[in-house]
Image (cartoon, rainbow, N blue to C red; front, side, top):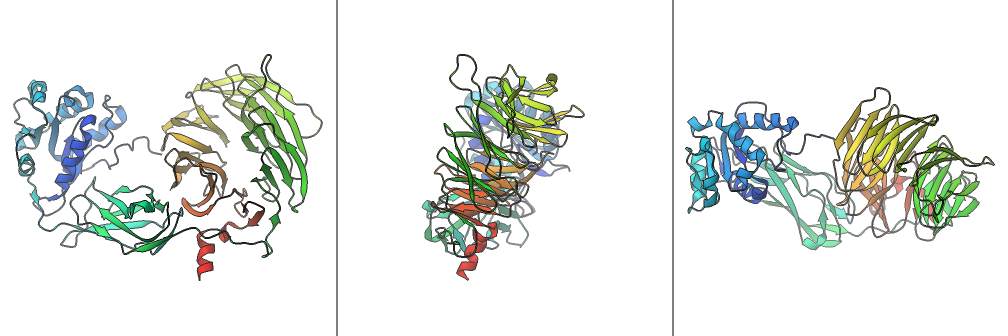
Length: 583
């Protein structure tokens, strides 16, 4: 994660790394982008595409210390400064800062300071220090020609050409395409792709439902699209690539196939369970629990039905221990199950005067389960005859919880994370109102919040907080090595304890992660319609209308066909299996 990466362009480090710096108010972004596109259709005196700096994420707030230097370097590295004068421009602190910083540079003497008057009323707002510099009214006919002349640009008689390096030959609905590369070259054969230049993809026909990141920047003359997928089958599809100032490119037609039916592996020697519902592997990766409606059934490693128990409401929380797993429902009923079929059923006591007690979080310490409630109680529960024990009371309630060696980390409903050791509060950190998950990774507490990710060093006490790389968050799946998060648009990432993004992916809006293996590189996602997807290394490789589960070691997948569960290696599902079947 990069908390300073909101600009979408690399900060310049050498003089005149930019030909043009566009300064504008956030409300005038459309006009600023139109100007950038028009300039990118020109060429410099050397015949190259101009390098145009356009900060794409104006907030209108005062500049912060961590990106003020960024803008200072961009200003110093620009040959020309173009300011879009509007009434809004002179009301923004960041615009005024850029304007005054530009006036300090030798641009005014070299003719590199070029104001554009967007509306006559803005002339009254121009400050005295800049009033002596003539502007170009955008109400004047052919004003863009005046801008080109002032910037020493000319229209290009022969535009750069885009090209697909290796267009897709075949695609499957919902499956992520291999990375698609689009290159650009000038008539002289030199690569194009000015800093800030982008390539946009579209599909014909549009109802093929192309999804993913459809606009990406040029890097070294190449734009790479890594998360493309199609939502509908089509007999003939073409992809179009466009970029400002470039001749577009179109692929040859290719087919988008509907997913092939899941192979019937019942007669192949693979294990088959006569069970319907949602499968969940035990930590050993052999035994399975299957939740069908409100009934949980344990199937042992030998594939025998060993025990059943019932929830009262729909499940709210799942957790894995050393050998056991647990599920809690919205009423406060908790099922603690072992892989041999032993199940303990316990109803969390409700506070006085309440009908039920909503569990806020579950956490295992070995095979001892800790249950934290919105009401603020933290209980310990284990298999056998030992009665549940109330180990802590947290007045702020419990949103998230982690237990380790008698030490509790509790995230309250007030957004405060508290370190509780042996029943006493040791230390607190104020995080944010909504906390979505908490994981203990070595000596760190890793907390995913609604807006930020927090890493608390439990030894040194240092708290590191960075902005979410995707938002708003709709699903979180914490793991020992990588934590996966997904936003409302279907963008997702898996990141490690150092908060570095290891895997990025894009799928349909509204999905949530429900299973993880291979350190977060093998994921199971549940779609809003109840279907499930298998995602390997950021690519969707298998879709099923029924539930899927992956074992913690990633060697086995429990795939439902609606009547039974098939236990197969993940390699026998998805792209590899389909390719083998077509061979």
